[in-house]
Amino acid sequence: MYKCLSLLSFASFLFFLACQGPKLRSVYTLVDSPQAAPDLSVFKQLVKDKRVVMLGEFCHGAREVNQFRKDFIQYLHEELDYELLLFESGIGEGISIEYERNELSATQMVTAGVTGPWHTEDYVEIMDYLKATPSMHVAGFDVQRTGRSFDRWVQKTLPAITPNPEIYQQVETLYTEMLRLFRNRKVKADEALEDKYVHLSKLYRDLANLLVENETVVKNKVGEKVAALMTRTLSNRQAYLDYFMDFKRSNDYRARWTARDSLMADNALWLINNLYPDKKVIINAHNFHISKYNEKELTMGEVLAEELGEQVYAIGVFGGKGSYANNGRKPELMTLTKAKHDIQQIVLKEPYEVSIFPIPTSPETSQNWLYEPILVNHSFINLDNDRELIPAKAFDAIIGIKGISPPKYIN
Image (cartoon, rainbow, N blue to C red; front, side, top):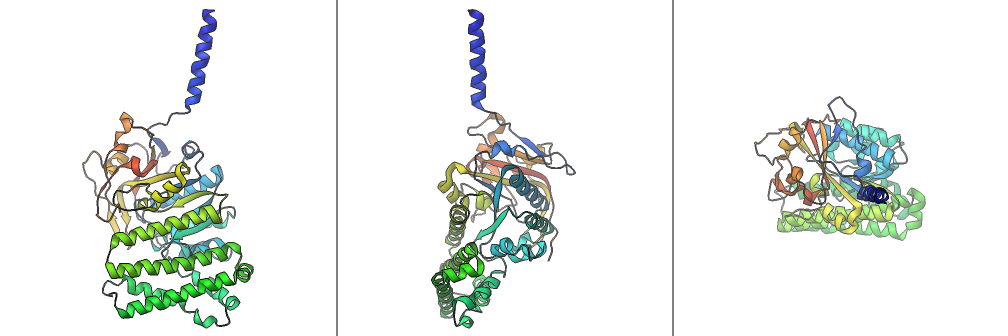
């Protein structure tokens, strides 16, 4: 009788352990040494049942981050069936990456669509992978323009939707001129700028109405998804003009950043829920944008987390030492402090070249730093130029890459 009870108790104990599921370790090796191939198998556990995985970066100009991104995209697609890749690049410019990939070279795909700091050899390799993998779809979600390729789609469509295409043929050229004026700090919100803004806004609004009124013709010309993306891009052009004109009037940087991240979130949700409702999604952007929480600013990640809840998994990426390229492509040395809670010190103390720190649902003694303010230099956090964040509030995991260097640019 006693033996039977003991066996029963032991069986119950085993059942209890099975129900608990595997316990996350405090840190996993992703790359053992600079020469080693990455082992990303831990993501089968980390992103299980997650529809959207957001991978960040502490800057836009780190070669090792770009290379990890390439391996990460390939792994999630081939092993975990993620089929939609969203870049922090213009929604209109993303059309060419997706729908001209057979006609464009990998280098042309980069220059046609992604943001300028990503015009690197690493991103050419990502585009090579996309060209060879038609089951992997790609789009941009940024309201900012990141190239001139959208104009090709405008010119292609105009003769089919209006007897007077000449009215709109220069719309993207006028937009380029408006961007130059907006970004020139010496240009004020005077009557001349207001007139240009009103004129260009009307052109985009009228062109969007033409696309909607001739929806069937446009779909037959460029396809259903491209037609939807074109209409969305024209709406984004108007929204960008609106919030940047407001900025020229008020000089309110916080309102400008809120508008951008809100519009990026709207675009991402539209792509995820409307254009690709059956796809698992990878989002690639700066740590700031994918952060689920920011004390000072509204971020895209915060909006997505609120809308999609537990479907979203955010991974912040940080470097340890070396140098990177800023958005102007100039090298920046990664200085190191002696602070215990400096993210660089935490990354460097691990014996691995690339490590991931999954954030548990409750603090553990060995990983208390994930729940405390840590120093994050060499990265944009908010407009107040703060340098501390609490990882557990912002992300679901942290990736640390020891050695960082500038990428090689293609133009």
